[in-house]
Length: 199
Ligand code: SF4
Image: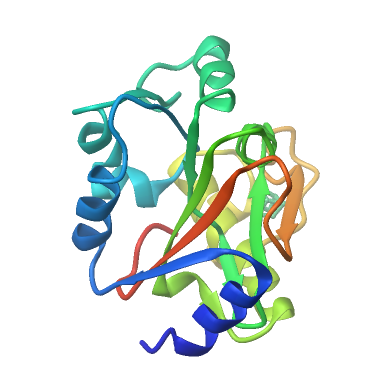
């Protein structure tokens, strides 16, 4: 996949953009970036599949509620020097989209970190904002609901789509759209990877 146009759009918006042919290459690059830092991770199958927690823990202190569940870990991740996450979708027009249940991923990414970094596989790229939002709602969120075995129509119905449910187990409670980097971070990176990663 050619990222030239998306890279140019995101760079013009103020993001630091890097491209990689594989997730492994992105992981190796990330592992070489920091030493002795505190690093928070948002919930993400991309980070899980790449083994980012283990790789970054070699030389840093990494806080991830997928390894150490609890409010204390979420708070430490939110205050870490570096915060890593993925997105549910990115539009070729430049918008980064995330849907959140508890809000930790959205709120932590707005914090005063030295670096906020979004790791994005090619499967998350959609041509327009509307199509990216559609993807986040009808692909990423239902797949996450299925992973979590939620009692929601998107997890229990046959069709993979959002039903805009009123279920108490609904995982879609907040929506974040970034047009440009938020002011709290010293630098906001977007790593575009030419492989399918996560949902
Ligand atoms: S709003 Fe409900 S049905 Fe739609 S994706 Fe979220 S949990 Fe599933």
